Amino acid sequence: MPPQQPTEPPGREPDPVSAPVPEPVSVDPPHGPAVTLLTQSWLDVTFLHWAVDPAEVAPLLPPGTVPDTFDGAAHVGLVAFRMHRAGWFRLPGLPYLGSFPETNVRLYSVDEHGRRGVVFRSLDASRLLPVAVGRWVFRLPYVWSGMAVRRDGDVVTYRSRRRLPGPRDARSALAVRIGARVEEPTPLEHFLTARWALHASFLGRVRYLPNVHPRWPLHRARLLSCDETLTAAAGLTRPQDPPVSVLYSPGVPVRFLPPRTGAA
Image: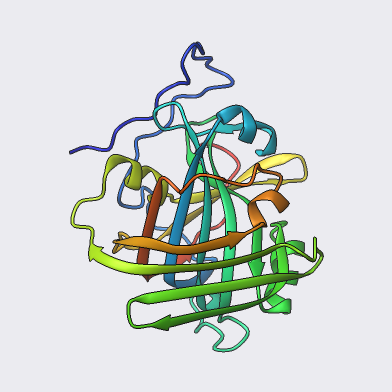
């Protein structure tokens, strides 16, 4: 079944400026060969997603982007994982400084060229130096947190408590039980996970930072517990309902390509 295309919210007329036609959802990276800027692996990844009103997330996106919607809904993602051996270019990744737990709060965006992406509202990480590089070089909202990821059989737990720059009480404690392998993801699961770039504001312009990795090996997962305030700290309404999607992946190797501003 081909991925379902997102639809406009009911009662809203498409606008060629504020609502560009999004590119098709692609389960494989659409980018051609290019210079590698960063390498890393994302391991033991848990995706939690909640559906929200697009009007809530629109003010939180960079100028030049609008919410990417599926069946009229925007989505907030809470994604916890282990960063493994992050490094520059194609050099070997760093075993200590480049390996750490991370938990991010993310939204989904479309820019004026129709390119789909992720917008990070926060990225909690446990290594201070990568946090500083992420904040000052890439202008991403990294924060330094005390964190841990543990796996016991088919149960994975993630813990995070923010240190700097705060708010100091922002935290998350998640546990999931890994289920069966997903042979064919649903259109919504493709929409939420097949993301090949991030959008970020830099010097008043939106930057598009592409990435390349194999298809996600996904598993169904059952959420055993979730106590978090990271979404509220990111300026969103704290979810009260169960997530609409819970997925787990053992992970993928990733390459980031140089940022772009135009449609090329």
